[in-house]
Image (cartoon, rainbow over all chains, first blue to last red; front, side, top):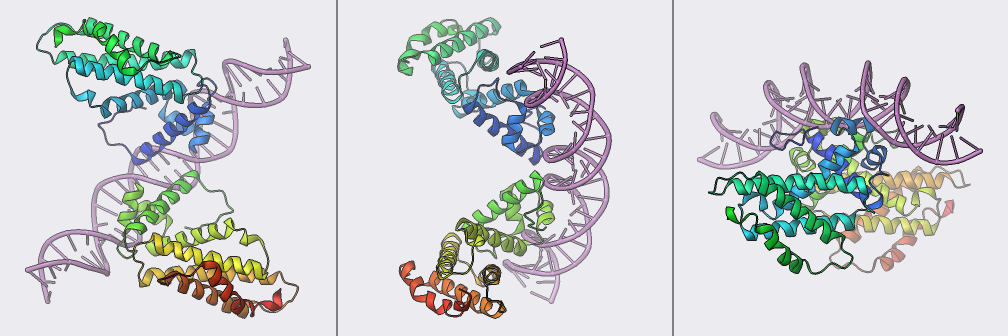
Amino acid sequence: MLPNPNEKLDPRVIRTRSLILDSFGSLLAEKNFENISVQDVTDKAQINRATFYAHFQDKYALLDYSINQMFRNEIKKRTLDVCHYSPDNLRNLILAVCEFLSRIHSDCAQPHQQFESLVEAQIKKQIFGLLSHWLSQSKVKISTEIPATVASWAIYGLASHYSHMKKRPALDKFVDEALPLVAVNLEQFA
Amino acid sequence: MLPNPNEKLDPRVIRTRSLILDSFGSLLAEKNFENISVQDVTDKAQINRATFYAHFQDKYALLDYSINQMFRNEIKKRTLDVCHYSPDNLRNLILAVCEFLSRIHSDCAQPHQQFESLVEAQIKKQIFGLLSHWLSQSKVKISTEIPATVASWAIYGLASHYSHMKKRPALDKFVDEALPLVAVNLEQFA
DNA sequence: TCAGTTTTGTTGACAAAGCAACAAAGGAGA
DNA sequence: TCTCCTTTGTTGCTTTGTCAACAAAACTGA
């Protein structure tokens, strides 16, 4: 049930999880999240339905896990998980979130209420964690909670806005314009 | 251990087998059959070595099974498994064997003695079975054993020869030339 | 030749996945 | 409202896969 990455996992568990995740991913491309049943997922994954429940509590837990994994990979790919606060890193983070959300929206069939809010909760939690990590490395020993909260909401809000725009401007320009507004709250940690 | 296709198979068995087969296939592209260990196969397939032995007696059994499956698919693809004897069907069969062997030789790293003879045994067995099936449908109720034996050896020999030629002629021409020599022994069943 | 390594099959205990069956909850539609 | 149908979690039991350990070949190279 836990995505614990440090302990050694049984190869069967790894296989089953990725079958589930792949199946879920391709179903999201076809259907609304609400219209996807656990049955659908296990059918496409060619695993037993009972096995699904051995890994995830329900399809909501699967979505959480799935989004988390994808976003985590995105961050890792850009090595944003092993760095500190700087305006440049912040810029890259905002870029990453914008691209990630845009991808979600183009890959997934008409996302609805529930879907979006579950995504939002997971992503914001990760942004917050990442920022907290960055800021805690600063020499300045101020509480990071408030600034990290403000910034994570702001960043997600920006990305959400961007990814929903009908005529999206060039991402670089968009981020250039938005960056200072976020950075101003974090300057003290630079 | 049995490739029994009519009984319903546990999904795990199907998965494991195809993991083994895929792994084996890609290893054959890299190495000699003799240099491939069961360890290699299970490593690449990401399964436990003990699991391999639950499915195949050894790597020779795996090769047999693998060749059998591939050739069976080739035959099925050309719907040669659901037909009767006719010069035209015979022509297609010869064509199929030639192409199959040519593919084996281009996909697999320097095949050696042992490898080739195992392939030969399996393929000839299947050709013989197929021809027996064809001939037994004929109105003429003659024993099919001798003609099927002659033809299956001849066909394999032709295909082996063709696939080893340095400068292969156009396959169509080659088969056109060879066909009558094989067909003459089977005419009585037409 | 002989010691050192790798590969091979095999085993038994244990964990994961499959399966069928169940009650319960929800939806859809007369 | 009342059916009929689908989906949901859950359970007891079976089968399959994993793992570590082992002895017995089979290579390797000095």
